[in-house]
Structures are given as C-alpha cells and as structure tokens.
Length: 354
Image 1 (tube, rainbow, N blue to C red):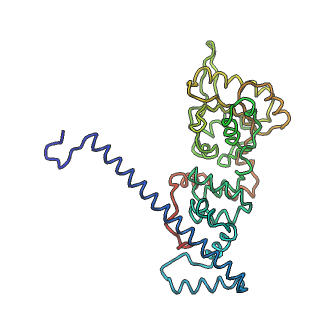
Image 2 (image 1 turned 90 degrees about the horizontal axis):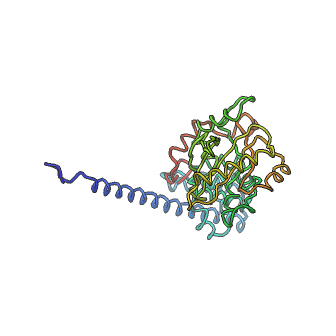
Image 3 (image 1 turned 90 degrees about the vertical axis):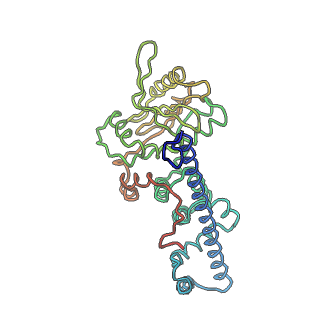
C-alpha cells in the first residue's frame, strides 16, 4: 500500500523495478562503451594499414610518422591520441593483424591499450590470440593482463601432471587439465624460508582475492582446514573450493617440500571423502590438486598411475622465490587490489588515445 502523502509506492515491487532499471542502464552503458571501443580499434587498424601501404608504395621512411602526427595534431587539436607513439602502435597493430576480419571479430573485443600491450610483449600470433580470449572471458584490466603475460600464464596453463585423461570423462578432462597451472605464482606473498604448510595456507587465505586471481576464473572459496568426519574420525582439508564452470569441488593440499608419492594416496582419500560427504548428485567428480614446492616429473607420474580419483600435481613459487628481474615487473599488493576493485572497459581515452 502507498504511504500517506507519497507520490509513489515504496514497496518491494518498486524496489525490484528500480533495481531492474539500474541493471538495464548499466548493461546499455557497457554495450555503448564496447561499441565505441570496437569502432576505435578498427579506425586505428585502418590508419596503421594506410601508413604501412604508403611506406611500401611511396618508399617513405620512419620519419613520415613524426610528420603525420604533427599535421594531424594541427588539424585536430582537441583529439589527444594522434601522437607519433600511438601512430607507431597503429602501424605495428596493422602489421600484426593483416586480416581485417580477425581485427573485427577478435582484437576489437578488448580495449586499445590492451592491444598495445599484446603487440609490445607477445610476438607469437597464437599466443596473442589466446591472451585476447582470456581477457574477454575474465575481464582483465590492462595491468592484470601485463601481470599474466610477465608471469608466462600461456606457458603455465595445462602444465601440471595429472591423471585426468584416465579418471575424468570428456570434455571434463580437457577442461580440468587447462584449469591447472605449473607453477602457480604467489608473488603477493612473502614467507620466511622455514615457513610450514599452515603458514602458507594462512597467508593465502589472508590474500584470498589475489589467490583467486591466480587460480583463475570460476573458483569460489569454500573454506580452509575444512573438516570431514569419516567413521567418527575428523580429517581436515587445507583448502576447499567449488568451481562453477567445471561444476565440482576442488581440494588443494599444500606442501612446502618436494612432491612425495604418499601425497597422492592422501589426496585420493580426501577426494573420495568429499565425493561421499559433500558432492551433490548433479556435481561432477571432485578434483584434487597437490601443490608442492617442487616435483620430479617421473615420480609424480608414477604416483598417479594407481589412483582412482582425478588428481593433479603442480608447484608454487612464493614472492621470495621469484627472480629479482621478475619481481620488478610485478605490482604491489595495494596496486593489485586497486585493479581488482574496478575492472572496467577502457573506452575513456587517455592522453595516448583519441
């Protein structure tokens, strides 16, 4: 019922109606920003292609870009992205993507500065396309994309040793294999050399947002030291997650030592217990990940051969273990948290854009 003196009813129906309108407006804003970005990226590609063609046909050297930047700036003084640096990126962009269809269907789906990062840092075309796809799926900001490139995510994906092909049905086995990385980079942590598993576990939980970013999209944190009671005896799982894309629980057992064969037997038990106690009939089989400081490939492969449950063995690298050259490329925790707070479309152009 409307309140006395009110111009409109303040009730649950109105609140729901207002919420739906807000969501529609936000979605429209995102679509508009994406459309602007796509048109901008295509324009940049066309400019870059023209520069390439003219240089080839007319024999113009590199200085033509400097002259072109000055003349365009004189004609369009209010447009901020026609610097010689950005024109060079446009040329490199067109050279990297000679097919306009690829630009429209793939490269134009991410902001311009993301493309600049990829052109500068990734030379292999297939690897570059992979990062574009992952950026689109995960909504990475430019800084997050740089982190993923600098830490070699493309090469780390699917690198763990697993028995998924034998223990999981298709296509679940392929999806799960690509889910795992090797190594996992915990550059946001600083632990003493004598740190134990519980120290690593507490640190990861304290930095759960950064940990989830490194794990990848789809992970939802369930708990640490998660209790499972089997025949009256309690067992505790280091870290328990649920993966919404794979539709399954994921058990992580943390080790600060090299992988040992007995670790796989313990994980086999944990996965079986989760399946018996927590798994819903609609869930896919639970997956276990043994995360060690190091591993011997042959030992890990032999240890998994006799296991009936899907288990992967991977390694981790903590901030203090990273090479100094790589540390300098990585942001601070505070910078990373700022990026995670607002991952948004970079269609508002900065001084290096239009």
